[in-house]
Length: 69
Image (cartoon, rainbow, N blue to C red; front, side):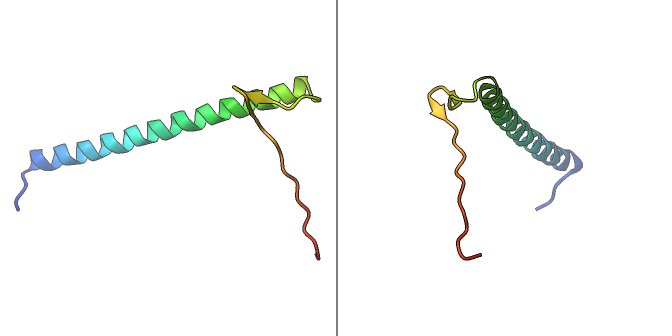
């Protein structure tokens, strides 16, 4: 199958656009989780006796101890 320069440049452009969109989606998701974590940290800082929550979801830290070490 033969390609000309225009077809190849269009295909390369589509791949670059796809990668750029995927990168933007990943960035948005990471920023979203970062904001949620900041909100949880602020809640636990201002009210340390209450479990921090967002929309009814509570964040807990599970501490385990390794036996036999």
